[in-house]
Each structure stands twice: as structure tokens, then as C-alpha cells.
Image (tube, rainbow, N blue to C red; front, top):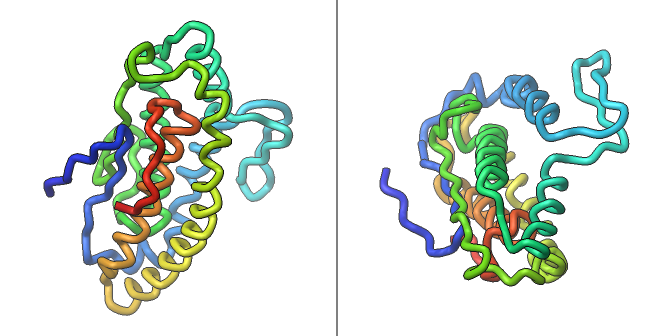
Length: 213
């Protein structure tokens, strides 16, 4: 399937498959538990981490790798005008892994999330030329400038969850995921990816478009 090249420095897409497996869809939340625990263990650190009797991770007063990367990258851009390539590569791969899990949970794919393969989930960020492409002071305020997006995304994410519930019923009854619902959920993911790239991963100073496309 050929995917159109997006001009924004952050891109997200999922290959559409109309027919879905009813069995894995019915028990999707249970199938997802092991990989969700792995993701939680991978992205959490801080004080008092443990596992409760149900096998779920408990994290109290902890931070996150994503937050640490954001702060470290912002400081590096501000004071040194550098974005270490290995920080960037790690952030990209972590986000790809998270995107595969999110897509599986949202029924966009039936393939169990891989820890290495990209599968049918396409997420890419362009590595920035910091001195040429990034203003060293913007990392201090990008998170604030993106507030209008947070408000809209709050509503869109709720709508995407509602669309996923409708898609679940559709798959259970017909074995098919409606294309219109699929495109909407993927579009919300694409919007989130652009905002994250701008405000938190800090790979671009180009303000994210208000668009699902």
C-alpha cells in the first residue's frame, strides 16, 4: 500500500484492513495486558515501583522517560544548540512501539505489537538541523503555545474512543472495520503525533496544523 508523503516533519499512518478477527477483537483488552506491562516498565522510573496481586504495574510518585527526554532535549537545544542523534533515535523507536500498542488497542490492526518490527504502523519524525531549523528559545514555550491543540484533542480523543466502541460492535457483528471510523481514529492519532513532535519531542518549530489529514 503506497502512503502519501506528508510535508510535516512528523507523520503517522496505519494500513487499512477491512476484515478483522472477531476472537482477538472480543478479548483485545486481555491480549494487550502483557505488552502494556512491558511498555509501563519501559517508560516508568522513580520511587516505589511494584507489581500488585493482579499483575498490574503500580507506580507512585514516579517520573517518565518521556518527561526526562523532553527536559534534557530542551536544555541541550537551549544551551548547546544540539540534539543528540541517539536521543532522537531512542525517542522515535519508543514512540513507534507505543503507536503499535495504541493501534492494537484501538482495533486498527489485529497484529500483536512487535518490539522490533514496524508492522503496518508508520510513524516517522524528521531529524532536525538544530542550528538551522530550531529556535533555541522556543522549547521553553512550545508546550504552552500548543494549548489550543490540547483542548481540541481532548474532545477528539473522546470521539475516537467512541468510534472505537462502534468499530468493536461492527467487527463483532460483521467482521469489518468501517473505513470512515478507521480514517477518523487514525487522523486523531496523526494530530496527536504532530503536536507531540512540536511541543515535546522538539523536532520542529513549525506549528502543527489543525487537521486530521
